[in-house]
Image (cartoon, rainbow, N blue to C red; front, side):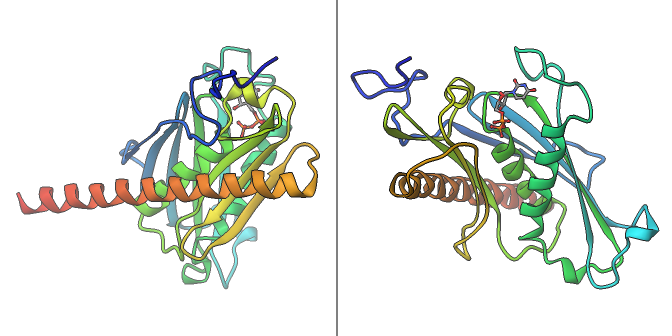
Length: 241
Ligand code: UDP
């Protein structure tokens, strides 16, 4: 199948290095300490953060840092294809772990010893790149909850199809069987905190594909900063009224 037309456009009309449209909203779950909805094209996820609060399972309590718990879940209605397994599947366990480790890289854990932060991420609509969208939503939700962080953490994926590096794969491109690289980045510190790839690539091509994902992460970071500034302005305006 041809994933790039002779005019150089992808199946959804994007150019190879073009990202899907980003959309975000902060404070979407009133009960949570922090929450956000993040959209990357047709992929839409919700993140809710609770804490820092008392550790539920005392045996897991740490005296020098906060315990971070993360749960990723795909809603049954989030995909046109039936979800492969409704509950407790290996993919969700793996993605929960990956997101937890990525978020731990930006949380200043030593400032909140003997406490727990719960991050819940729910996929509302899946069209590829749900783990990236969840990391971006979790970053916004952590900021909304006022959790001390050393940097934002943003994520984006890229792939390689028809000998062309492609940014931010959608489901059709993701399921084409080509390599799929997901990167998590601390943009201010310029540090990669997550790197996953599910196929092989020659090293020189890999470097290009990874660099593309890093550029995607930087673009997401710029967007997230804009959203946070807008949100702060709105809060100041409401306080002034
Ligand atoms: N997907 C699905 N049902 C499932 C698992 C995945 O429809 O049970 C789709 C969904 O669109 C997802 C895509 O397959 O975004 C790619 O899944 P992958 O495991 O590569 O993770 P992701 O790219 O979402 O981080």
